[in-house]
Amino acid sequence: MSIINLKNIDFTKQPSFFGEKLGLQRYDRFRHEKIFNLFKQQLGFYWRPEEINVSKDKGDYQSMTEHEKFIFTKNLGYQILLDSVQSRGISHLLEDCSNPEIEAFAKTWEFFETLHSYSYTYIIKNVYSNPTELFDTILKDPEIIKRTTSVTKYYDALIEGIPGDSEYNKKKRLYLTLMSINILEGIRFYVSFACSYCFAENKKMEGNAKIIELINRDENLHMGFTSLLLRILAEDKSEGFKKVVEDCEDLVIQMFKDAADEEIEWANYLFKDGSMLGLNAEILTQYMKWLTNNRMKMIKLEPIFDKVQNPISWISKWTESKSTAVAPQETEISSYTVGNFKHDLEDENFEDFKL
Image (spheres, rainbow, N blue to C red):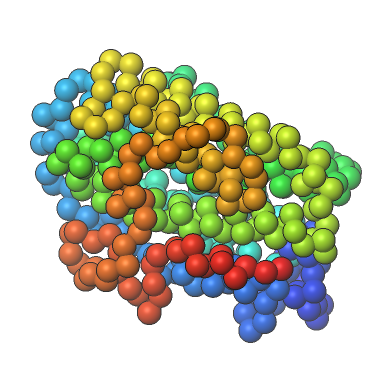
């Protein structure tokens, strides 16, 4: 098997997956131009954690109550493990990929997940007196491991496969992995994100929150990509996923419910010894139900939770990227323009989406 397909193939007429093996990387014509535009937008997102001043955070952490330290530390551990999964998992989506735009986005996406893991390390090294001790505890926490395996099981099934398996089963494994990633990017980080932003609202750990804001912006783009790709697979008959999508609908709905339940369970674990000013497990329960409904609508699924509103509307100033451009060297950086690419993923990116 060759590393590259040397046949002259028109990849605009190939399905996104399980078509001809990829060959010449050319970006002058597209099957999915919107995905290529997301790739270009992602290129403009490049940032480094050293751009953020976290020097005040160490003192903030030392002044916290014990249960606040618990909330902050456990969230960091969970976040770095999930991004470790993502930075190693995304490449496996490409093994049966036959679309250059998807390939380009995914390869850049994988780099950003590694950047996120490095950023968490940067936070830990600047906040904790003994970073090694913290790292060594992450894989010993059963609550973190339990939530992580909910994600890795779909990657594992995709990677292991079954020799000689049918194309239908291969497509099903890929589709469920994409769905699991979409849920991860859109739901599974958000209890942790909300805690980071709430600390910052209370003038604590503000450097950490600004790094999380940049990570959140990246994850929004990744969620937008997976939502768009899932809609393409569901709605474009030439992709060959129609039966898989129909057969998996009940399972997908359950996946969203399970993710929401696990985030709510995580919130109860974090807040078992006390609340934060402006945030507690009950508030986060309502927030996760509202957010889950919102994410399901993005891929045209019916919401599963009745009559829920966002109880922490203040969070939108953190989760919705700013369009203001500031100089990259400023420590207050949260959004800036590089190469004339706007860094914000707006709803309008998908308004005129057509197959």
